[in-house]
Length: 340
Ligand SMILES: CN(C)C[C@H]1CC[C@H](N2C(=O)NCc3cnc4ccc(-c5cc(Cl)c(O)c(Cl)c5)cc4c32)CC1
Image (cartoon, rainbow, N blue to C red; front, top):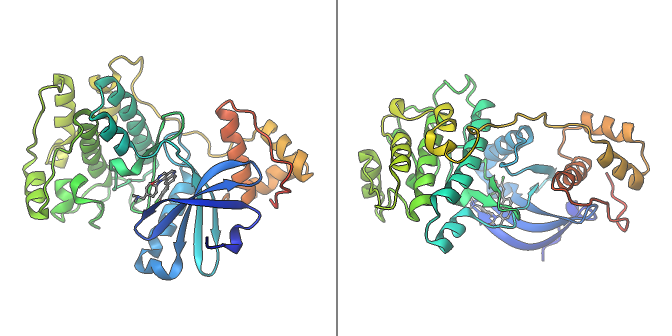
């Protein structure tokens, strides 16, 4: 087991839970609270031209605070590595959940899809586009809630969501026609297309466009033609058709999606998102931290508010807050005298 000095006394690294391109993700324990976290480890030399993606993802995740977007707790940089400490999702990938059930019922698909729509609507409202939405990047936490991950490709165009992007990125299977054609495109519109592919995968258990040869795959995507299995309700067929429109101008918008009849069926309200303030002061959590580190709650809050919110103090605060929100008792393991 490689020892990383930078994590000593702060996190106990455990098994590797996944690898993504230029990163390795390990399960770890945040020593001060005993909470499980995921640590995304990136070696700087191996990053090469991917280095800007890391900074992009960190900046995006620092801003994002949504119940269906994986939370960034801490960033540790050494001369050789970046460590991103992220919310752990013990339920694994949504993809595996679909495969094991063959396909999901309309009710279960709607429950999950509303969570994805809420996260993406929040992202777009803040001027971000994910650009790599696919089942592998949608995880489940222990309460079977969805968590969006991997913002290494997300974009926040300078001119806002109406300004066009050019970089071709993401996986072809979920990529919108305008993206694979290399046309200029709007991040929000390619995310809608990818969500259409996701919804199709939830309801059908297989992909709308799939082919071993990349060339045939492109042809299928550009044709916009896909099978509509007999079990699909007419409402879900209409919704999928409105998302998998090859012409981005004809594609449903995120606002229309939040209010679509298929989305609201059985629910009292359209999909909404809470642009909650990223950092609200919680006295109970501050008192717990103060009890252990001996600092006064005002001083702890002062330092938290002034910090760049990616240090151990922030991770401790957010992990305790998460436990409180989940209604779990929260304490700091008195064994560890955290260095926050
Ligand atoms: C590009 N993909 C394929 C890479 C894999 C890497 C391992 C992942 N993973 C598991 O395999 N099993 C369990 C598991 C549990 N909790 C996780 C929490 C966060 C992340 C995470 C978050 C962000 Cl923001 C991010 O950028 C990245 Cl790369 C990962 C991954 C977790 C995870 C799934 C995606």
